[in-house]
Amino acid sequence: MTTLTTLDAAAVDRLRQETPGTGEVIHLNNAGSSLPPDRVTDTVLDYLREESVRGGYETAAAHAERIEGVYGSIARFLGAGTADISLTDHATRSWQAVFYAFRFGPGDRILTCRSEYASNAIAYLQVARRTGAVVEVVEDDESGQLDVADLERRLDDRVKLISITHVPTQGGLVNPAEEVGAIAERAGIPFLLDACQSAGQLDLDVRRLRCDALSATGRKYLRGPRGTGFLYVHPRLRERLEPATLDLHSATWVAPEEFEIAPDGRRFETWERNYGLLLGLGAAADYAMEIGLPAIEERVAALAAQLRADLSRIPGVTVHDQGRRKCGIVTFSVAGVDSWDVRDALHGAKVNTSVARPTSYQFDQQVRQLPHMVRASVHYYNTEDELRTLVETVEKLA
Ligand SMILES: *Cc1c(COP(=O)(O)O)cnc(C)c1O
Image (cartoon, rainbow, N blue to C red; front, side, top):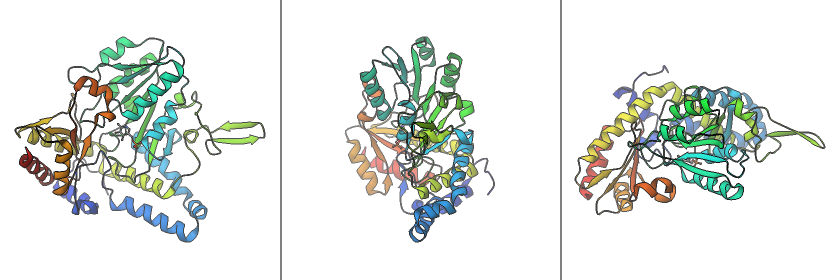
């Protein structure tokens, strides 16, 4: 398969044929968990079947090279070195492996963004309570993205970490991660990027992002299996971060009183993992690279823009997405209709969406006072006809 520069109707058709779920449902919950292509599902199932007749350790030994190859697949996907990759079981675990390795003290400042994700915010608050570190939320600009001027104004030598979400769970916003990366690099402050929603829909490259660490999940836009995730850590950060927890995989017990921490990304992993799922993750990353990240980004953004425009025309419907640059997540509400009822009505029409809840984004909620929002997250395998079904169903409710 050659790399497609743009996704025409024939290409989309072929990608849908490789995705059996597209014949069953109109799946607009790709920010939750997307439909995997056959190649991913087959990779996982074939491996599990082999384990069942051959033995788990024996199967892993027989596929050692392929398993090792998953590091290469994720590294290529991110523009990173193979040694900089850790394979985990989901994004939060990846993120925690880095965040909880920092040693914060009283008065140390952690800068984050308004659109920050709940699990990350809870971790900041826990560490702040425990250590006396201070969590500060950088302002948004008038477009709703992180205000880079406000970020720059806040920098001093007490700032120990800049940690933001690239694309939030609650909307189509794309935060200016590359600008944040440039600022963090100039100031010499570690920059941790939550790329959970951007991985697989935007053209990510850690060299361009200039982040010190990036966490992501397999099941969302990347179309990998559930229970997979990965982490990138730049060598300059990896070398100075001692993981908060270690085991016989992330470290080696070299003498009765001595252990050595793994020099590469394995220091942030644990020993036991589901190799079938990991191979499925590798297959998903290879699949995305074959299609081409710029082509994916272009189609996802175009479909979402179309959907926002169509929804905005319906009287009583409010589209809530912010930001100068927007991606595949579309959030909206219908005046006088509970968003859960909208979601259920859509489900009745075989359209999968989800509902965004304020407990996932309290910093944002504090300022924006949002109602519960329906979240329709489009992928490149969705079609204009599918979007029309959603719009017509919403029109009837409004
Ligand atoms: C889903 C999500 C996460 C958590 O991912 P898990 O794989 O469930 O750990 C983190 N950040 C953002 C922005 C998310 O949307």
